[in-house]
Length: 420
Ligand code: DAH
Image (cartoon, rainbow, N blue to C red; front, side, top):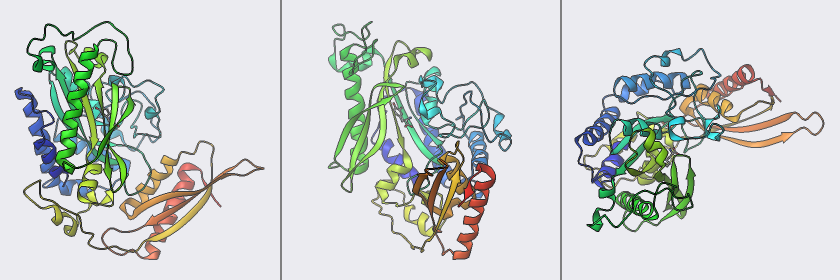
């Protein structure tokens, strides 16, 4: 059903002003790819389990079917040996971080945050990774859809693979100030200083005009998806690749919910990509997250369900059809706790990966409920509550217990934990 969200994003025209043929080629490719993905290629995706190794096979499959590319950076990869196949077919380096000016000590580069394949390659962690390459190719308004991979907690809103959409729009002076008629009285660039509202190279009028264009575009997008009366707010944010930067939050069931990150593209990125005579904005949003809100889907694992009781609810032609997901069954969970001593270099995401690899989609949630250091020995202990629940059928206690023992055994073997 993600394509329904995309159709609606498309309709609200985030890049409406783009006339260049190449832009449309890219856009069309994005839509077609996504549609075919969720219909004909559905099975291919679902033959795979969701451990990182298998995610990569999915990545390769994806690569064959599109020109999108994984990115790579120079960092060591711990699990070397399982994943050699991905090395083939990679090109150029540094898209995920370097091309976006992410500092070398930025926390998002940590091994515990992403899937690194070896010292050269990683699975892309965000669609922003494609910005610079596509700008280099001469595109000035584009949307990029991609599967992105992150190591994270195990709960209803996180999954190691999800989909993002990136939007980039560049402007010449003439385009940005087209509403003025005579643009000779405004200045596009300067050698000034950076402050909260602008970059060194941008004049205040360039920066404010970009900001307004960006915010209007995204406001329009949010209204189109969530209705004209949706409450929204802009929150100042920081991203290494944009300045100024914001997050858009919408009110959902009484709570502010972040739906996207955006900002004015760092001029240095544009100059490295050969587009220094222009300025631009960019945004990135998570599609599952939007779809969950739009259709009241309670658990992100459902996006991988092949159950017709789920899929048929989204089998509509008109993307504007109002759909509210109706749960088809609520199976009862099996809850098991485990507590163990951890080695000093223990990383929670390593444990979550083991849970995902062994438990797959049967694990609904992992909660750290006890965390302490022994006062004398200084040994660290952690206790997790794991909720097992099958989305489509009932799960027996012994089935869950077997998975649970498998998880603990793998933790002992691979992470050096000691059960208490
Ligand atoms: N890449 C960011 C993320 O995954 C989202 C984002 C923020 C994309 C700002 C952008 C941007 O293009 O300008 O969290």
